[in-house]
Amino acid sequence: MEFVGTRAEKLALDAPMLPTRLDVERFAPFALAVMAAGAWFCLGGTVSEAHGSQLLSALLSAAAISAGFLATALSVLLPMGSTELGRRLHAKGLLVYVHRYLRSAIFGCMLLAALCVVLFFLLPEGQPGLGRWQSVLLVGMTVYAATALARVLEILLHLFERMSQPEDRRG
Image 1 (cartoon, one colour):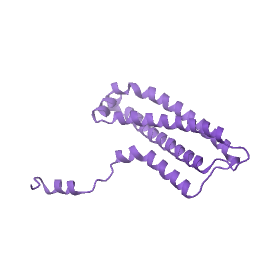
Image 2 (cartoon, helix red, strand yellow):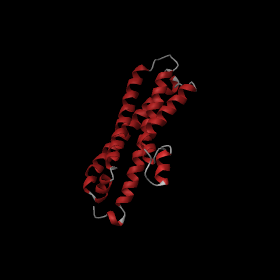
Image 3 (cartoon, helix red, strand yellow):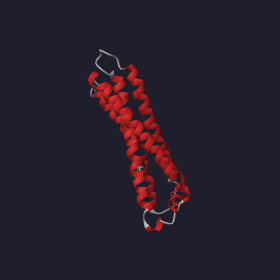
Image 4 (cartoon, helix red, strand yellow):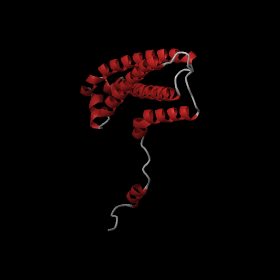
């Protein structure tokens, strides 16, 4: 059976599939977290006892504040589906990604906060700080939460910018 179509269509079918911007946006937090945790492990990184409890408390505070901010952002975005911009995003199939990204950022921050609480109890006194696997897990989870939060912030700022444009003022 022979291919029927234009030469450009045949070349498009034969071309390797490169990731789209949406693919990169979708998988970036997880991929960066895995790369950061892998690099931390390969470089033999650990968290010293002197910095362990301070780092955990700072990360716990930042994660909890970020989760609260994201929950507030969720309450702002929920009625968005009834606006003109929301209807356009829904028609293009993009509104589901906004909600999914927001949910993953909230869960990432909540998991980071929970991990910090658990690691507080596992932080041994008189030992050299967090163990290697504990610090690898902490680095990976921190990078995931930070990049998921950055992704949501970028999208929110873009949406608010679009909503402030004249054609979107009606709704």
